[in-house]
Length: 158
Image (cartoon, rainbow, N blue to C red; front, side, top):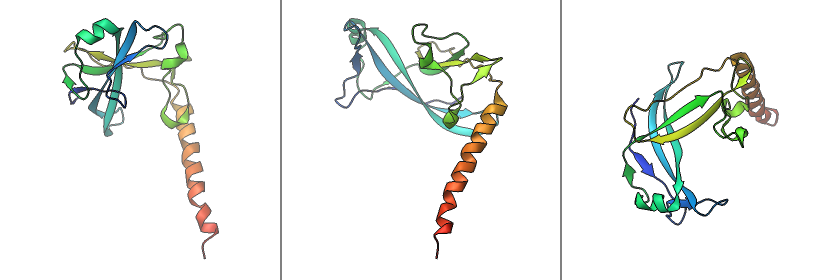
């Protein structure tokens, strides 16, 4: 997997440390990275990954993050059958693209979250969903709906 450097993001004002709304002592820095991926079907694509680096505001300031600067490390994703946030488990549910279908394994919800890591051996952790037929049917419905929408203009042509 070929990747670009991890870039520090910021808000519209260029601020990189975003303070938590629930606790002013904590915050996060958002980072992004472009990754060349080949999926299970052999389809190549470039994907933008983003992650948050949470921490105490005073600690985040010591890292001296600068807007648009590049930092060493990588953004990986981890998938799990256990929610990453037990207080709000719905936040990291893996959804199959535009279908809105939740990806599952043997009926269990799959959770997915991106993480920034400085560890050179960090790698993605993937769980293959098994509700392929449900997802395939949903994509077929979307395709048919889009095709019927494009045929509307033919009814009004001269």
